[in-house]
Length: 89
Image 1 (cartoon, one colour):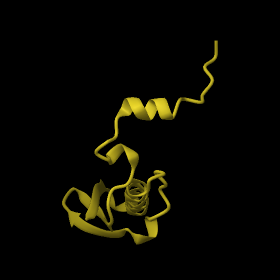
Image 2 (cartoon, helix red, strand yellow):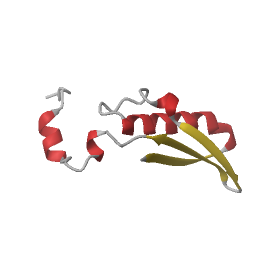
Image 3 (cartoon, rainbow, N blue to C red):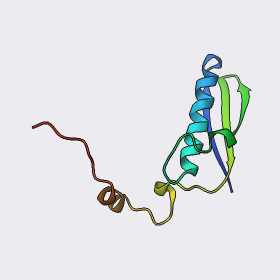
Image 4 (cartoon, rainbow, N blue to C red):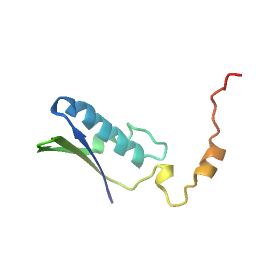
């Protein structure tokens, strides 16, 4: 399977958008949602258009992020990962 993700970018922001595309695909392919694990394996291309540049990343792997798997339920995820932020009283 090939995962793909695209974002439009103004010419001066292409490096930032490329980094975002790499991080997004890497996190989707990692069970721990890590934006760096697969970043070097992402192939990035840009296509010029009258509106800017389309930055597209491709990664040859299966989606592994828990929230993309067929058996994911938000309720079970919340129960397994409770908030650890203290709320001021």
